Image: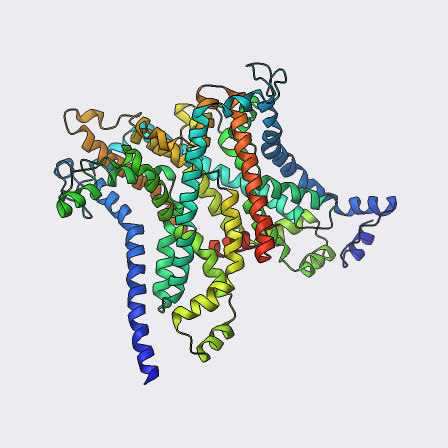
Amino acid sequence: MADTSIRSTGAQPSVGSSPGSRSRHFRRYWQLYVMLVIPLVHFLLFKYAPLVGNILAFRRFRPGMGPFGTDWVGFAYFERFFGDPSFWRAFGNTLVLSFGNILINFPIPIIFALLLYEVRNARFRKFVQTISYMPRFISTVVVIAILGEILSPSSGLLNRILEQVFGMEPIYFVNEPQYFRPIYILTETWQFTGWTAIIYLAAITGINREMFEAADIDGANRFQKIIYVTIPSIMSTIMIMLILNVGSLLSLGFEKVLLLYTPSNAMVSDIIDTLVYRTGLMNQNYSYATAIGLFSGVIGVILVSGTNWLSKKVSGESIY
Amino acid sequence: MVQQRKLHSMTFVDLVINFIMILVVLICIVPFIYMLAMSLSSPSAIVNNQVSLWPVGFNVQAYIQIFTYPNFFRAYGNTLYYTVAGTLIALFMTTLFAYALSKSFLKGQRIVMKLVVFSMFFSGGLIPTYLLISNLHLTGTAWAMLLPFAINQFNLIILINFFRAVPSEIEEAAIIDGLDYFGILRQIIVPLSTPALATIGLYTAVFFWNDWFNGLIYLNTSQYPVMLFLRNIVNGTTMVGDGAGSADKSTIAMSIKSAVIITSTLPIIILYPLLQRFFVAGLIVGSVKG
């Protein structure tokens, strides 16, 4: 029995349609199917069961009546949040924060990668890279805690510099609504610029050397080479990253917003995810919060497929 | 002559670029140096705003205080446990799944891959996930921190791509030598994939080490991870420096906060340069192909 299976494993197995070959297929590869079972069950349970759980958005949740609630209510919860001003406020804040974030933090890693690639000393380049990844590994809690100390009105480093150098009054940055968005966006810059740049740097490294040599012969300077060779060559990577970014437009760093949230900046810091958290987990309006969450999830899927489609049309790049 | 002028202008550009890079490096590390200086300074120096990037009135009081603080120790221990257990479970699950999925001749492999990719763009959402965890009676147990994150689709795809790159001749030779697929995975694939496993192991460990939100919604106070402990100090939910009394409680809290930040971040800062040579390759494989 073992003999036959050993001899025939050399070639890539062809999947036949006759029942005999099917049973042979399973007999030969049953161990691979066994390996698949536990992770697949786990995957379906923890990734797909919550997806099915979104049914709750259309059913009324009652405690003790199971995860899927009691009776169908159709789009009642959707109608409710569409008429709810706090939903629209959260929706608007999410969009402003997301677009602001993409506007600032999409180009910065590209620029950083382009500049870093121009650093001549290989050891210094490596050193800058190593240091610039580091913030990616820091917990959001730590980032916000450090921020709190640096921006503290009484003893924070920044306020002391503002006071001593510019003679300004201390500003309570984390409590003032107008500083919430810059703080959110700039901490993202701090945390992820170096990390995201890895991908662009890899793309730049992959460019054929001959292209630069040809540009040299044509008399291009460094700046012209970046504009006419490097950027067009990494355009496909840039497009793919843009699709991924737009796809996650509505799923901002929810934990960070939650950490930065104070009652006094609520007007600008309440986003869809924090609204879901407050209505769902804190006030236990499970069905209502599920409906809001589902809505933003669907918008996200539409955004990613839309950008993907557009990108395929315009540049031929797509992620699926 | 033309050559020379070019060379000259280059050095100026180089200077500007290097200056920007030094600035980037400073922006990345100055906050940590500031925290370190604060955690090692005397309360009176902090009160008088004398501390900037070097400790003033050097002392390790803040560290002594957090180490004698039982809740900090417990939270730190909890985090260690979640990180080690979570990473092991995740590596086990992801390796099995990725190895099976790397065999495109398996029936149903394509469908499962589609399910994996779809779930990257559309996830279950906070409330259904929360209700699932509580209906499985995982709330209040460490499993709530560990199980839901055992398979990360991004890491899975990195590993699948890595396994696919292992030449099939090696496996064929192993089968002729009498190994079955379990044996191949354990004795050949896993040892060959150490870089990839180290990469996703590091990602996973960092995730578990830094997690606090799941602790907040699923666990009891005694089970809190250290990041949640830190958040509660920052929020003022957990009082620190109680023993000191009087006016400078808030400055003591300041140096203790810094000490907690440093102690809870140090393991990662130490760990990541060691694994750095692996994870860059991992990120590139995962992002470009995923």
